[in-house]
Image 1 (cartoon, rainbow, N blue to C red):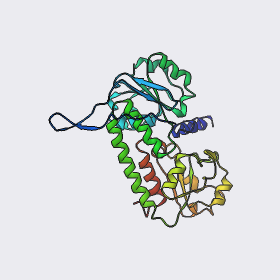
Image 2 (tube, rainbow, N blue to C red; image 1 turned 180 degrees about the vertical axis):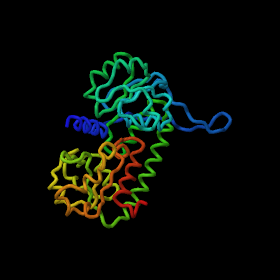
Image 3 (tube, one colour; image 1 turned 30 degrees about the horizontal axis):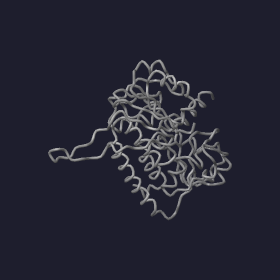
Image 4 (cartoon, one colour; image 1 turned 135 degrees about the vertical axis):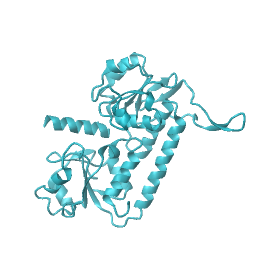
Length: 321
């Protein structure tokens, strides 16, 4: 049981349940060179950014060594072409493949000595865990290492803000803007297609298996994602990541059940299908139990739009082919 609670804690940490963003400078604008050719303006350093905790963080020069303390920040940095600059990542980092090979600097507890030894020019922290790690982050600041606390995104605009903040801090403002634009366009396509759906399906999402079943309710990003694809979250009246009663789930009779724990629980679908007393549930009768990639639907980084599409394909395969 102890192992399960440890897994659940790590899972919720990844979700960011355990904001604000810096203002952007005009650093990525294109301008004409002396010969009339188009050039890209280089980001100016030093630069000062107000982070998610309201701290003014000054970065003296374009970072050559970056430590990231949460997978979403790492994925953003890699998407901005900074893979070769990343020298340390959290124990939970597994994407892209190159991230898994980076030096590990801790999980729920960070290894301060290792981080300091890596001599980073910036540490990318996260608001979801910053208060729990406050003493450690202050030690890094005292060691002269800039610590940028990125916002705990709860909607798409805040994800975009996170990307733009990291882009500015690392001198990749132009790439960050391009990445955000691409994500916005893809999301708009999904929303447009979802708007055509007439028969909205009732969906139940479980992020942990029985008997301790947890589901995303109101005020969670997952709830927002289900709204985007025009699905009804049957846990939407609950608050946050809530423990749910099995009888209540049966009574609400979901059309589709989505699980997000197939990567560490064998035969997730079979476990749900075999539950006693669930035989009358539409999702069980029609075998509409789909396991989705937890990382893609919970990490508030560049792949979150792919995660929305994963949800759409799982719930409405006839529409999102």
